[in-house]
Amino acid sequence: MHRKTQLGGSFDVKVMELMAWIAMQRIAHAVIANAKDDLTSEDQILLSQLQNNSRAEPDAIALMKRIMTDIVNSPVETWRTQFDSYDIPSLFVSFACIAVTICSSILPPDIYDELVGPIITLTGAVSIVDRYIDIVKRSNVMDSCGEICRVFLAFGFLGTMIKMLVAFIFQEEVVPEMPYEILVKLVHEALPVILESCDAISGYETVDKDLLTSSQYAWPGIKT
Image (tube, rainbow, N blue to C red):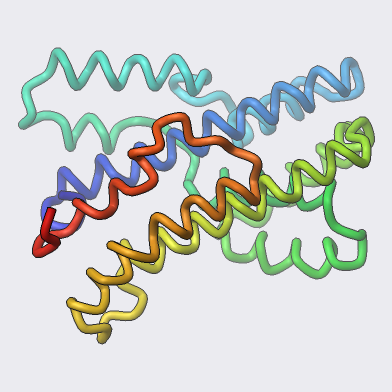
């Protein structure tokens, strides 16, 4: 749907931005709690809002509930206007902040420093992400993460990143010249294996095992 209609596109993007912001706020709350009184009110606002001032709805979970209510109570003709009006941080900014926070914990300082620059540049919001990194460093939140925690965090991050990369390749048609029949075969046979492997790497257990093979029925032309 999101590739065919403007409404679908708005819904797809806003939901991804919202999920990233929810995850980002969980990290921000941990940083603020760990830093205690070492952060200014301006620091705390930037951590949780990813901008220099509070958003129209400063709590991501509360905004999620509001969006769900709006969808139920509003006619579909108004949805796109509503989606576009929600004040949510850019997906790239939220994801960059999540990535640099985790990388600061699991990577050696020299490798981390090499990665941070390109990540910040890709966001298009250099000043915000720069300030975010400075605040996280001053909070020393990652110093409380022991070696075992760092290992689990590293594997969890790796498994998640592989899933995201595969999803991007398939969904955004990164290889557009790939014959449709080959693409269907890859989805049908390879994707369940990839998902299960990523779960094994990250330590995440998919409770609904049928979900791992759900891609078998996701594409037209696949015989069930």
